[in-house]
Length: 187
Image (cartoon, rainbow, N blue to C red; front, side, top):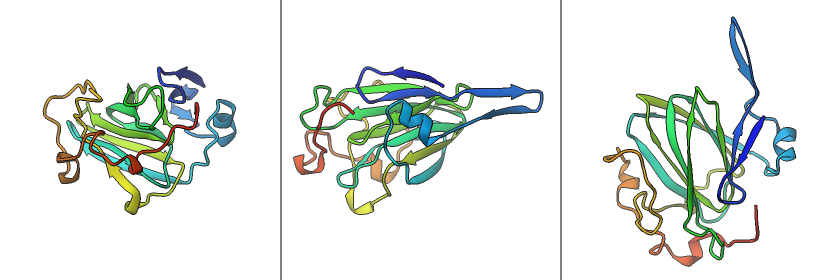
């Protein structure tokens, strides 16, 4: 397994080992023991899969209580994936990191609790997996504007396809402080 620590402490890019022969390939997409060895100590409790068409943008989403860490990766296709530090008091508050995740590169991104997450689809379609450290809680779901200028994400598409929910969201400065997680040291 190859590990790359990104610019924001706690956010990690992971490339599982791949075993390939004439029949195809195999890779271990998750092993609690191996992920704990690299510092991901969250219990991953729920798996989600989404299918999206090209230029669909999903995000930026988080939960205000019952916060979730997410191990994300593309099962099919290519996505531009983003994690935004929204933890009040964090030295990297409002900073973001991105990477391309695809079925070809098999990269995974660990998005720690306290981060907003989003992605846009670069390929014709994408099948995307989220392993979450907490259960989905619709009562605490919060979203912020994908194009918030205070965050300044350089999305690689100009006119994303958005859900009605993601179309008119508040900026991070418009979201109540009580909805943002509090920084408690490095993840």
